[in-house]
Length: 541
Image (cartoon, rainbow, N blue to C red; front, side, top):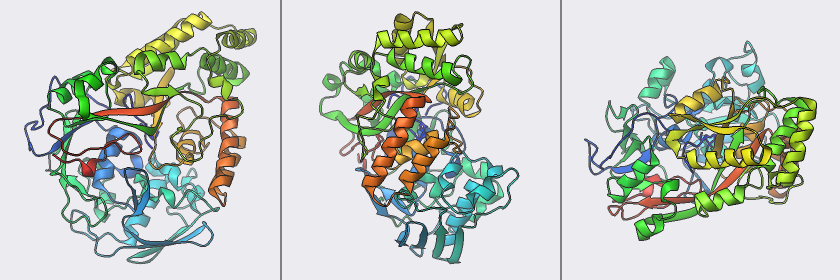
């Protein structure tokens, strides 16, 4: 999934995400007409970190828009169930070799046909190391990925992709993968028109897709303000727009967004700010939407941060984890809309195990935390300040300060939150590997499997591995989970992989999510999807 920007991934991812996420200006109020079409459904959003290229979008500000503009081989409904979208058939006998047939007569919004080559070219572009795409890791299972990822690349295209004809292509994986077909609705697997490859950055500013929506106009994207999309009349898939379009409004403050929701100037808000968690049910009444969702919240610590390398680093990360009173923070700040994390995925996912060996490191244990910290001090005495970076446009200040205070009061060190004005600013430092402090991040699922949380964030070769964790033992267990023949076998291997993470603690899990959202009085139908985002296509006014 993508890296998530606000209180609610991903993802990562992721995305995110997440994700994954917000930009720029403060909007004191944003009415539903916003100077454009009042028939559009106004929804909260955030300035995308990058141009809207599917293989380079790993945060949910951009991701929620990309998923409206493009259609893949599959799509996921509000419950997270996969359905064929452009796929006519996906055939395999061994989970290693796939023959994929796409439905004929699909077009991009520039009128050019969507062909098998549109998929293969897009995947090869996304995988090639010199294109430096943030989501390149998703192509890791495909034969030939290692060659296009070498420095310099030994090949320009993956040998495991073959175009048979306009509607058929074949995929050969390096090893069997139980997760590959399920993930073919994920954004990096979307097709691209030929025009995209002439200037990908320019394409990302004015994307030409094949999804249920398209840009409302040439100037639909008003950076740091909003982005408008309208239904694509040529869309032939199973998630047609049931509204007249969407206006993604980029808020700097969720308090402002919530005020607009109350005043019916915003039609859908997927995150209730912490300032309103004690009153939103009374404020909104039957306009409240709640659901457990596949999202989590972490505190990442860069692998090269002073005092956090080697044995000393593992001890300090475990001490910090045990110094955080997750339940108290969840109760006092989030009013039951968060629960303490028990692993590195999400409790709403199939195969979740809340009793993993080593998970006690996620429990509040002040005495144990002090002992661990003392052991680390015996290796190298602590110096300096423990800072946690967060984006102040995402409603994170209260809980980050509570976490910092819990660490400070338990360990007796100076722990503080470090605010960045926008999500983009903090994400640029994290993804650029220039951040010099701990940071809050999270993942919001792109498809509902535990492997989709673990692969992008902790696999050694993943470019979205923000803490640069590298463990051959973890990689081997994760690959065993991917190659499992049954879900039950995969769940068992995934549990063993997570137990390695609990031993090494490359990042510190904090919360799972119970999403709380709200709709305006102008909306006649709206619901939350499995990942905590709106079921955008089905919102009606």
